[in-house]
View 1 (tube, helix red, strand yellow):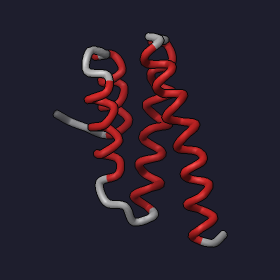
View 2: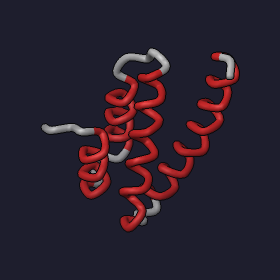
View 3: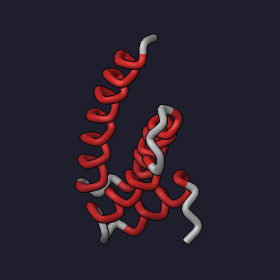
View 4: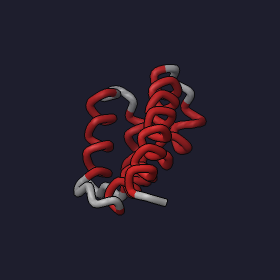
Length: 85
């Protein structure tokens, strides 16, 4: 698969994952926080594999700022993004 096509599929998947994450976390569906956190972490890993440095950390920071009062979600993200602090 060519680079251009891979980026196209990544953008498509990112949009779906971000919309799903926003809906689940804003709707406080706590039982699904882990599923969303792992999907966000996977997007970060894929982007880093494609050469975008700190992509995972950037996604983590974006969602930490977006949902600062959702400590259960942030805890799940820390686990899947391997954040120690």
